[in-house]
Length: 146
Picture 1 (cartoon, rainbow, N blue to C red):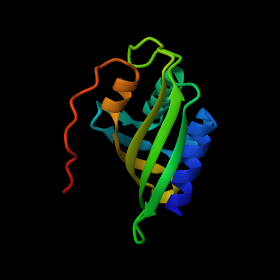
Picture 2: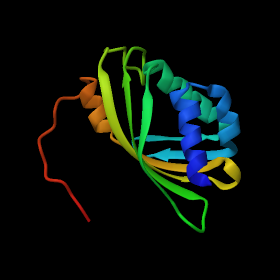
Picture 3: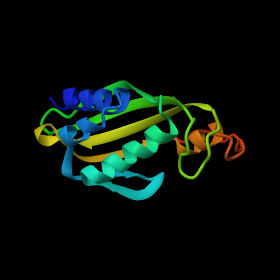
């Protein structure tokens, strides 16, 4: 059930740009975390601000879910996804660059009773800033796998 809610939420909110769906899928006490952004996304209003910020900077953004796993006895879902879009509006104080971006991410979401209560994500913020031309290409380092 949580997999279906996760997919429907991403499709309706993000891919269809339907901000009215936020109240249907996001719990009033929602907490969203990503180490790339120290500010926690709190509640429905926080999620709406997050949505507005991203869709202003990247109005054509589209999210594709590549892998989706549901924990059988809990309301937890893990997803690997990527987002594509064009930076045509201001985002994070960065004026539009016109750059087309492709960014990967992983999210783990707690979705009891058909609403997101918590989401912990890791996004490739460094790769995004490189694509926008904000930071230079860093040196190549070997991958770390544990």
